[in-house]
Length: 316
Ligand code: AKB
Image (cartoon, rainbow, N blue to C red; front, side, top):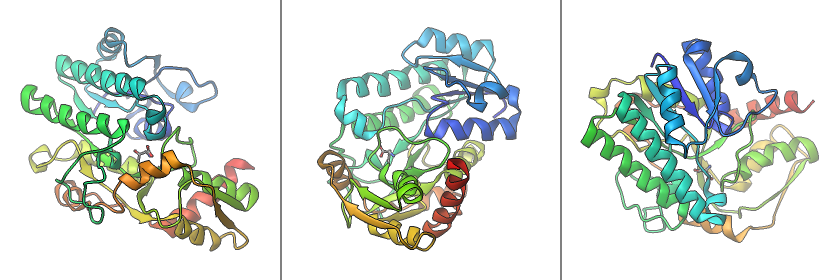
């Protein structure tokens, strides 16, 4: 990667990935785009920024040509809970944006990354240690767009030789930017509420296991996969990756190691609980480990400690 174009730069992943890539590859070599300007963001002060609606293919192509990028990281998409509330918009944006981005990558011969998700699995998928290659019949619109996206990226690689790569992200936990409208968001909200009120009401029920990862590991994974030797990649676009699997009372117990008075109760949201029930309990990341050295550093307690320290500094 020498010159990189990013969509969705103010989102949960984009806000941290953009700054990290600028540190590693040079401020001028990372062109950030989003549908809106977020005043005060360091992204606007450290390098190139362009407004881009990913539905506008001509503008996307124009920006990629203007900056002569060689890599395209396409992040703009709706998450699972919002997609369930607005299914046609999710289809239009998640698929339309992805097709436009892949077309730009094909026309300009760009290296390409876009994330899939544990949401690409469904109730018929084996729930524990979910294999890399298995049944994918998701029952959410988000999942439908993610499976279709995985297949489309494979197609652009097989048919047109576009160097497409991707991972299935679990729930991502971070302190910089809050996620917008996901099912795993409870595992971010809980840290904010632990610091502010020493209690949290979870919309996901006790006993509901989902895969999770701390953002620094997610950013490392993107860079490692994009820099991996292509001859080692047997899979390309949908590597299972996970750093931990837990259910709400386990994250609460971890927080209690640092904030002993913290309490947890429940007020289940049937929509998000239904989505969570359709996803795996824990996925098998061995293909990512074998093919490109995926190696997450944070377990639950290490993440809780870092997250609470960083958030406390931010909230003060
Ligand atoms: C969501 O909950 O929608 C996302 C995801 C797991 O893809 N965090």
